[in-house]
Amino acid sequence: MEKKECPIGVFDSGMGGISVLKELYEVMPNENYIYFGDSVNAPYGTRPLEEVRHLTIASVKKLLDQGAKGIVVACNTATAAAVRHLRQMYPDVPLVGIEPALKPAALQPGHPAVLVMATPMTIQGEKFKRLKKQYETEADITGLPCPGLMEFVESGNTHGTDLQEFLSRLLEPYLGKTDAIVLGCTHYSFLRRQIRQLAGAGVRIFDGGNGTAREMCRRLTEAGLRSEHQGKGDITFLNSLPDEEEIELSRTLFQKYEPVFRIY
Ligand code: DGL
Image (cartoon, rainbow, N blue to C red; front, side):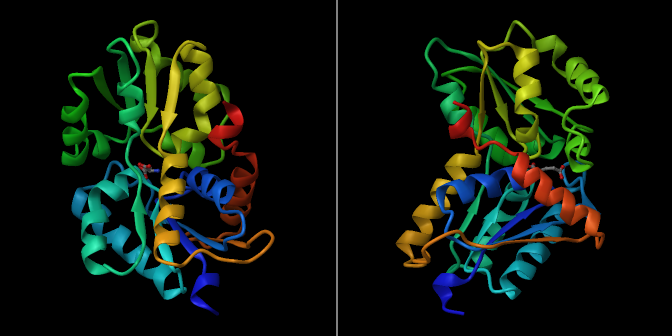
């Protein structure tokens, strides 16, 4: 296969990165994609850093072995743990990670109160601490670790009453005191509507999916690796859980997900 027609590799600890895959497909529909979800080892966000780094590097290697021409680490937790190492290991591969979209949220006028929902690892990590410090003078920033939340999406539950109750309990202390919410875990993007309903229409919700997709497009163009194929590309779903059910769920979540620009 000519390098330009090789797939873009997209990786997450499980199903969450499918929200980023959909944004990539929106921006570059003619590209081929190979998506790998490491559901066997999910969640990553409650594991030790070294372990997440090791798992991420192994998964990215798998995608490169399958011929990926570039990599999107579609997981905030894995990005924080491993993207620097991956860049050193593969300096010639266009490689883009994702981080909580704090900048556009914090730069809204009027010193907004910003709530960042993410995994415990992301919130405790150095990368987030640095990011928070950078925008501290612009906004009141609160990091909210959400252990247990990704599991709903991971099992395909994006609307259940148990999920509603979980979210209400989680967000209750912040309701009425928050101007913007940042979805700092790619799984949570599937819960945007439920979170919006709880938070109210006046609260703006941000995630990094679309920005990450556009950054990957820019990097591939710069490297002369954009496909010239006319028409839609192919998407291959792989998962470390060998069941057909996981692949089926991946396809369903992909179809269901509404890219940000279509909602706003
Ligand atoms: N989807 C991942 C993220 O963006 C995390 C989920 C997990 O804990 O594995 O952070």
